[in-house]
Length: 493
Image 1: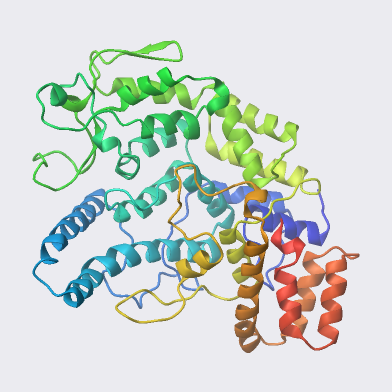
Image 2: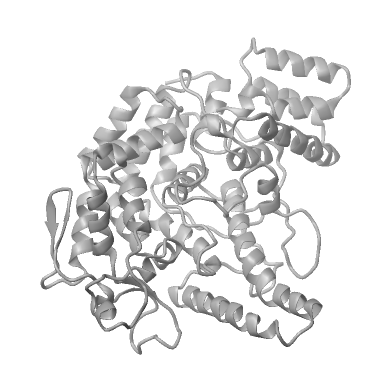
């Protein structure tokens, strides 16, 4: 099916981040997008040519091995604990300087900078930008953010671990996300202890029930409140989750026990629990209750409906067409949550309903789109020592989405209306006025480039196109370029 040029460009913005100026449109945009779902591409802090950036210190790299992740997690916790004792022996200036050097820069800043930088540069220079958009969705769906128990080193590894699960079924992803130490720590399930567990009976711990993960497993990750589950169901799921903890290389680490996720039956609530009318028991499989529960939740009709609508709201419209939601829901059910098939169905619905739906871009997606169309790279500066310079997380923060510091477990807003305000729009315009100055200094033939961008992305009779041409005719390229990227067409996809 052929579409006009400006609609094909809209599709690349809807499901990816647009195409860099000068990149030819694919002959078949839908096939182009679907081809990017087949495998999980590599992710790293990249240069423009797609190679790994090598000018950073050796210690600035992404953590992949679980042992490395948990050692970094424990080291951060130890340094935090030790720093409070040092505060009594040092001057205020000495203490603040040492804390910034040993904790603030490596954990509070660098740990997040490298993950955000990898996320941005892989989206722009990686091999599958459509895959990246779906990854952003799942990172938001299974939100893990910094803030709890000095968990900074767990956030990025958790999010990246979801990538390989995107080529399998939802059940595998759900199990992985629920039991990953990043999620267990973020939602405090590593303190979730059964009231009749051995640890509670023998008073090994003062910890008790924590409903955070149990509630989110039902409310956010699977069924949604529309399914009609009750508070008793939340309590039962919480009991099933007792004993699922993180294993760190601390004094409690048992020799031979792998670091990462650890099921401690001594903290688990014995007996059976009933969730939505079904009884879950352990018997010969101590961890079997959670395995069975996740298996049931992953293929529940309410989960299919919830995820189908959420995907449609994320990619299509705040009020998506009912037939689009139903189609994706049917594919989810028929394939038992095979994610590549579900993602392909989303792309089909984006293509089919392109002209009747629209999405206001989140700050991150709009920023990546802007850099992509302009051919500008994200700021290279890393928060090392006291060096200044613009940094990617700070730019996102200025635009209203300070990755990865999401304030709530329900993730960043996915409804357009939640990103639209006078202040948020003003921030984007101000950003464009600043970045356009840089672009005008770098671009050769900026007037010609802007004219071509307008021809490609605007309909022939677009009033936005006419206005920008009028501003260009007056010689104000900076204002014209700002108007292009801050136009309704480029703010929405």
